[in-house]
Length: 236
Image 1: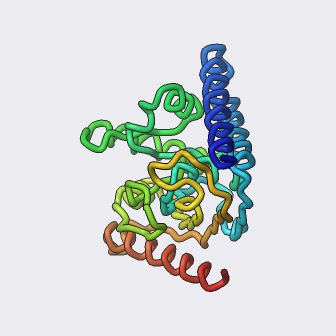
Image 2: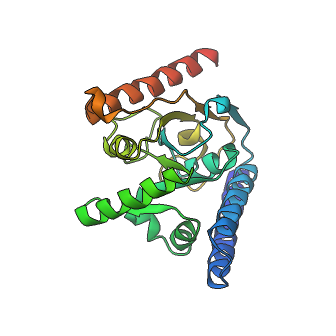
């Protein structure tokens, strides 16, 4: 029963924060205010879930713009990452997320980017917008698996995030998150109190002239995250 009450509190926080962000946009408060509201929502959502979060490796985070490449386990991942990072993070997500009533509009107001994977022109425009944000020192999160994992296993990485890093010159920061698939399993509406973790791994530079294909780079970054997952499991 408590798990459902926690989920209801999370839903209430999501609706309230989304409305506040949208109204702020109408009043011209700007993206910076919207991203502060979303960061507050992330922290409040995690508290509502009763989750204890372990964060490691934040000293690896570059000072400027970077592409944060993370595995994807659950709907909890977005508020978890918003709450974990000391700087604002933006998400590059599929268009369907932006179509969620209220929440999608709030995400857009906070500067998150959406891509229609079936529209090449949309992908080109998103690439330009993302590159501009990276040059301004922003942190962009990409979930290269393209979908959530039911059991915490890490699927194959699509190369789009690494193409963005190549074109922009921004470093790639692998991020391993764990616990989300247990905290809020796919299709469930009940929060479960389990430990959550965010592990920021050392960045790497994707050099377009180094001869490495996007596919090989994607496989290499995935292997780093898989290794981090294995190391984390040995500690528990």
